[in-house]
Image (cartoon, rainbow, N blue to C red):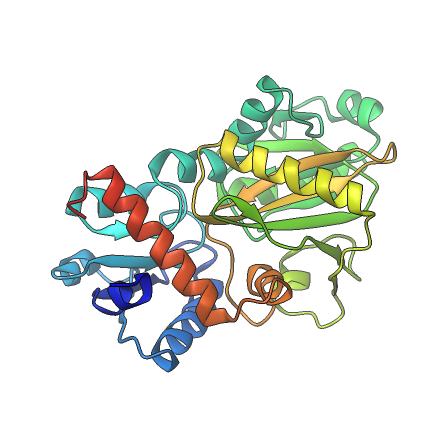
Length: 315
């Protein structure tokens, strides 16, 4: 029996929604995923994880396509729940999900392994912003465990620093400052052990924020990304190393910037990237010759076989 025939025999659920600040993005991603699977002949069970005791509906489900973004869906919580229930989940497991969701610890791991990432510090509204900005010039303030650029702001003065910390605190207790990099932004989608064609992102706004990601039609996505063959190879190699360093697997997206010295600097890893009409992974997959359905089938199959291997073939 070939792999796709095996996949057609599995009971598939799509998990979406949740209660994080990224709920609306997750709902949009789910519409894309569910529609593509249904058009491909599959009959996925749609489960909104924002509903109470949604997990009780998983009886009989073989594999769950997790398209929950943010806290609860992307940080190891759902991954651990599925594992305890004996249901295979797509994408990274508990460790990779938890590490990638935490921007501070991601950067600590990369720095320990000698992988390049911009300077960073754990901060709050009482931090000596003047001293920090004297060294860095400008900084980005980010909640450590939130996605889609929620609660993120660029600061260049002590006053804006305090205001940004207060805004970021709405999304979590830990706040990170990251040295501002004045250079182009790239993203590399990872599928299995390969990097898909990189994308050079040009946002018309001050930076690639929530508005630029999901609402604006002025953001430019450049594929090919405009790098030389050698530089593109360097970028993809670094993305794969960063992905593996956090224990991530199956699929995801690595965001990077190129600094004034021409060196690539790691920003973060997203283990459940968006699947909306503005999303980057489907865009990169299309550039690699994969339809949306083929992309989803690859994610499901890789996750299924990884789950079988982890359970000794009993998945």
